[in-house]
Image 1 (cartoon, rainbow, N blue to C red):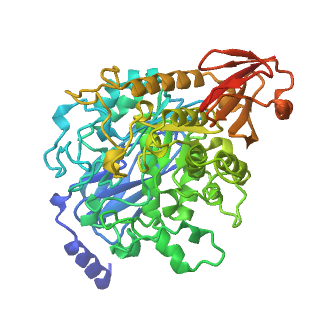
Image 2 (tube, rainbow, N blue to C red):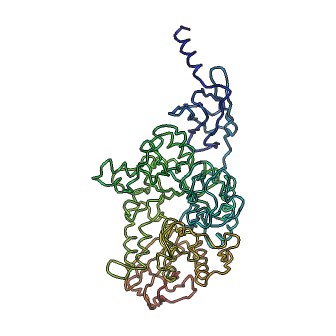
Image 3 (tube, rainbow, N blue to C red):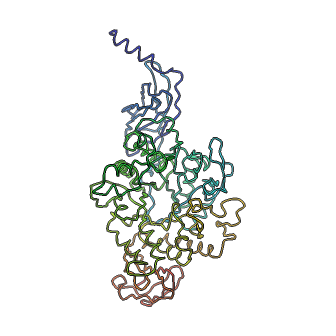
Length: 615
């Protein structure tokens, strides 16, 4: 060996960390599975000066492709290749310096459920129940406040933590099942170790840990298993765009480009139109996508390939670990578009039947449609996203039911919104909803009118798409005093010891609330087996004289749905609908059981009717 090479090696050795001090504080993901579609696995090692160590492993069917070092010396990203026939076991990851082995970490490679890849995601057969976990039911009083987490129980504060948890949801799965819901979407349950206003879950501080105020990873897994036993799937709420400012990364960022705008707060413009505008500037595009929501939510830069892979694998890990049936993706278009293309393609490749729904909150249907798979786009963008929330239809239904009937308002608003379905690759795959956790309750939007509420429930349960209902919709929860999110996400009555009202048992509910709950229960349980709603063609007729009619038509089941906004009953004019009614001679209204010979259908005042058609 030459003197120069010897000196170089000597200098390298004396600059390395003390061997005995090596400890891995985090290994993410904590495990993986054999038999996954992708043969590549990225593992993030985090520990003091871990980048100064060499990595080796010896396990049949596993090859170390590369070990990547980043800006912080405390991270090391490993890329492994897993052979298709690799067996479950512990992969010994050896960290060493020269001849000295500082640490051998046994990385778990687990067996996989044989049916995992073919799991069935949520579909039009389902009705989704959206729950804000902190506000639904407190099943474990011992975790209301947790040592080390600043945001303590404060049920008196609208924006405080109220104590709802996963155990509370488990305790009331029978109620959810009896109501006719077949999927549960929970607002995020990952750790939000923020100093205040953390209950909503959208400021994650650990991507691999359920917030202990909700329970544990194992309890989340148990919730999914117990729900599945009742025929109910669980949809995870994923946030790809940002983290909480108290995320553990923030004290030691892996690299300078881990966050957008170099980690400095620059607010987003919220001008999503810039991504599609043929006249848009790069400044407008960047300040929409890279801008932060608020200073406490640092914006992630998914153009960093290590971060992109981390986020993709995290979603796969939760689906596999908990046995989930779907993913709801928060603030969809705010993430990097190329990353979203990669994300959706990878998830669909791993789980061909898994469903994913993106939140693109705009009333412009062309922008919503842009992100859905199968849509003909102006720029050749590739997307594998199956579904999006139909915000345009939600606004149209509220306007259609509350606005005066005119040539361009009232029920015509619903008709015109659905007439825009030509923009979507697969309009039947959209998720439709009367409201959600970020907007005023539908009962408030409909001026607390029970008759309009019933009309809206019938429409969302029978129109094309998969319906989602926010917890409490079934008992007419409202926010009459303000549009504060804390009031919108009110505690579900009966979820806490000592509640005077109990919606689970019906105790002390108002007459209107009890009636609405019974109506919803009957509607959704009927929907479970309504094949025309699940897969029937949608055909509608332009509104006429204060009524709007549409059909759901299939080989085995056929429906006529009518909304009547008039203050008096109407005899439906079926003459113009003969192309859809050909061969049918009678009808039975689903919820009342009343039968009629065609064409004598009388629709009561200010109501919605669902008529099963018979030949």
